[in-house]
Each structure stands twice: as structure tokens, then as C-alpha cells.
Image 1 (cartoon, protein in one colour):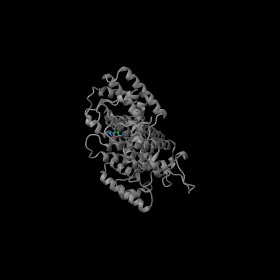
Image 2: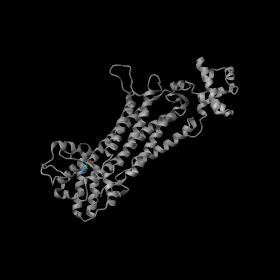
Image 3: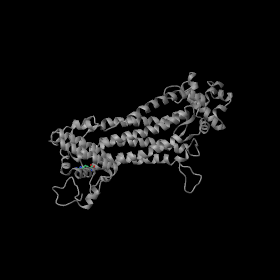
Image 4: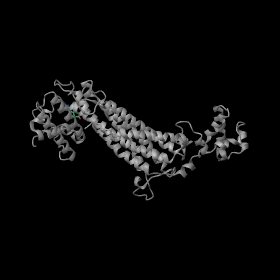
Length: 473
Ligand code: ARG
């Protein structure tokens, strides 16, 4: 092939300037869309044949050439060249190489505008499943660690200060719940993304008797787009997808930050496996939680991708504008970023060792049982406002004395309030604090075991969704 393939040029006197060509080319990133573009071409060839625009023999040749081209793309035997402006141009060249002039028939009734919107929907729908698989793996790792720590006491915090005892299993599951919501968001997004733009042409539909519903069905979409102008102008599906990935990034950053804290010498609650930690080039003793830090750091680019696409879309006139070519790299980057991050996090979590002894020692520190005293008073009819005040006085007394609540004498208790008596000490243990948390969703071992079972059940159903095929073939 010596002639350069271009999808336009009839009305132009010369070729494009190098500077234009270099700016305009997108094939270096949109080549990822090739298998989806070919799936769309197959569906389009069939409706052209149904409309009598390809005879049965031509359709047979077209489909065989598309199969061959698909295999050649997959094996790497067919590659885009720097002269191919985009994936659509490269694939038309591949088709012309195989079919000669017959290859030129496929573009009838179709435009890169409806093609690219279709390809990107298919690509993202497909990769949303891959993302779901990786999310489930991380959720599994957290859930398995939670199962080992249903009874492990930990110092629950607010404002990063010791607040109330919790079970570490509950804490770990608190990182699983956002991931379950992310999975729901992906599936919910998918139902809106499952609309087929093919048949919209450049913007106005086609004068040829095509069948957008048949194309939509073949490509696994639920319906063809109801408005051809909207179909080629709409990138909500990209922005929404990037919101989901940005929020996943934020969730992972919060998990990452906690692992950084937990593995610090000051906390020492968790020890990372050597395979999932890094060392320092100068300080031989260092063991760093780089995966957790990268989880924190990569949230920036995930949020940036969303901002990039929303800003690009803002104020664009209908319908297609070339600005929209900028929608793809952030989406690809989000998928690739999470594709690297999620397995690393899953490995780090599943291999970490929880230091139950260190957690137990830290749990009662910082008067974390003070609320137990206040609740004890409430059970005896003292209004919470007063109970809070009395308990505060106990804490103040301990602070002055440098002791813990359980060290106060019977006399101390009496002096602070006539409502107090020595039996209050029964609630001043971490075990009793945890055991008393029996309401659904709370941190006691009972409700946590229930939560664990529900989470495991949900993850099983997500595992099934994640392997569903988008393009039925
Ligand atoms: N590379 C383009 C994109 O990503 C494909 C559509 C081009 N359409 C056009 N009319 N120039 O958006």
C-alpha cells in the first residue's frame, strides 16, 4: 500500500500541513477502539445488505474481510501507521487492502461521528466489567481480612482522635461498603450508556433505509438513540464514567491514607508483606507503603480526568465538534490507572498482617470508654445532657491525676456524682463496650458477622455481573 488512505480530501487541493496532521492524529490512542469499531462495521454491513445496498456475495466477502482484519489487529500483524489519522481511517485502509473497491461500500450511511460515539460506548461498557472484576478482588481482600478480625478490638476514631472502641473487622468493611456502591454506580451507569448512536450518521440520520434497531441489538445495546443530533453530541456517558472512576479514586485514597497510618511506627497496627512494600535507597531500615501512597496520589489524575472532560464539553455547540476527540485519553487513562492500582491494593491488603496485640493495647487509650459511662447513666434514667457532663468531669479528674477511668476510686465516683456507683466499672471494658453494640450496622461482633455475610453474598452477585459479555458474539 503506497497511497495514503484518507476518509476525506475530495474537495481539498493538497494534503494537510504537517503541523495540522500532527495535531489532528488520534490513532496513537484511539487504536484501542479497533475491535469495537470492527464489531460496529459487521453490524453495519448486515443492515446495508438488508437494505439491498450490498448483495449476499458482497456481504459474505465483507464479513470475511472484517474477520480477517480483526484477527490481524489482534495478532499485531495489522498495525496503524502514522499516516492513519484515526482508528476509523486505519481500519478502512485494512478493509481496502483486503477487498479493493468493495471495501469503500461500508462507509455508506455512516460517519465517524456516530462511529466514534458507538465505539467509545462499547469500549467503556466492556471495560466497566473489567473494572468491576478488579473492584470485587479488592473488596474480597478486605472482606477476608475483616472475617479474621470480627472480634479484634480497635480504637475507632473521629477527627483522627480516639473516639470509641470498634472491631477492626467493622473498620475494614467500612472500606468495602463504598466499593459496593461504586459497583452499583457502574451498573447504573451501564444501563444509561447502553444506547446505540449508529444510524445517526454525521448528525441527521441517513437517507438510506438502514435499521438502527437491528444494529443496536447486534451490538448488545438496549435501544437505538432517540435523537441523531444528541447521539453524536452526547458525551454524558464519558463524564459519568469518569465521575465513577474519580470517586473510586477518592475511596482508594482514603484506604491508602489509613494504611499509611496503620503501618507507621507510631500506630504499628499492620505489617505489610515484603512483596507489597518498598525500601529506601539510603535508609536500610525503611519499609514503605508505596502502594498505599500511590492510591492516595493517583486520585489526583482520576479527578483531573473528570474535570478535563466536563470542561471540554462546557459550552460546545451541537452537534459533533473536534474538541470531543479529547474525551478519550482521560477515559483510557482512568481505566489503565485503576487497572494497575486495584490489583496492587488487593495484593497488599490480602497479604498484610494485622497486629491484634497492638490494636488491643491502643483501644482503651484516650478515654475511649467515656461514652460507655454516659450510656450507663442514661440507662439509669439520667438525661444524656447531664450524663455527658458527669462523664466529662470524670475525664477531667483522670487527666489531672494521669490515670484511666477504671482507676478512679469509689469515693471519686461518688464525689463527682451521686448517680455513679462502683458497678459502672462493668461497662469500662473494651469487651463489654463491643458486646453491647448489637443493633444492625453497629460495630459489635454479632452485627459485624451479619454484615460480613451480606457483603459476601453481594460480592458473589457482582462477580457474575462482571463477567457478562457486552457485545454478544
Ligand atoms: N478522531 C475523531 C474523534 O475522536 C473521530 C471523529 C472525527 N469526526 C470528524 N468529523 N472529524 O472524535
